[in-house]
Length: 354
Image (cartoon, rainbow, N blue to C red):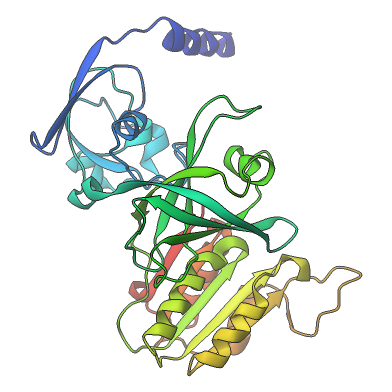
């Protein structure tokens, strides 16, 4: 009975509810928009070319799409509470993907997001990195260059295609050399039944025009000389490629140890590029770790979990900065290990891939 009532409510919300015209005031009158109510605030802002970061494409699983709602918006939903501190809730901070526009709103968004731009680009080349990862090299067209900090990400627009009837955005870290301002590389790992990765792997072709917006994110290398520890798995490699290029251009001499994990040897990528960085950077070591090589795979390197390799290598990380990129599970496990080895929580930086 309860399930039937829930279904009825969903159908009523989708097909019966009509909210009429709604006005959204942004940053004390900096901009006002009038729209037909009923969509999520994130979708409304995106349609108005006001791009709010969302690593999960509006599914409510990343917590990135925060805005402050001064008036309207209704109560905080259970789907938001895991991502909002008590102070944020008190201040009216909400996840824009979870707020449905039903009435007039007064909102505040960070000023820097007002300058986020949309770019058209041509997919210049698609490279196979592993059996389930590809590198997509995008050549910017309009505008023809982008300024970003290595470690940041862009949102890629996935258009409708057979099997998916709506536009969606997905977030991907920039994996290119920041000196090449007209190029954006994305390293994308296929997600089973993933809307955007299915399009990228099965439909996107070289020479095709795509749209991205950005840059977003606070993940970046500090400007201190402290020794650094990088930890990643899978497509978590992406931001570190850009960061290592940055270090090479700056003749950065800090000590860096990069632990990169894969379940099998076939999951590792860009080994030759990492070797080149080892040759060109003063104190950089790349340490690939394989959990369990396949029955026909030859592997003489580290074995086990990447977090285990870190604990075997270090006794004390009190002087280190740590940079982590990958799945939430891997990052949570790594933070636990790092703290047990004396790492300062304030110097552990991470980018969780939703």
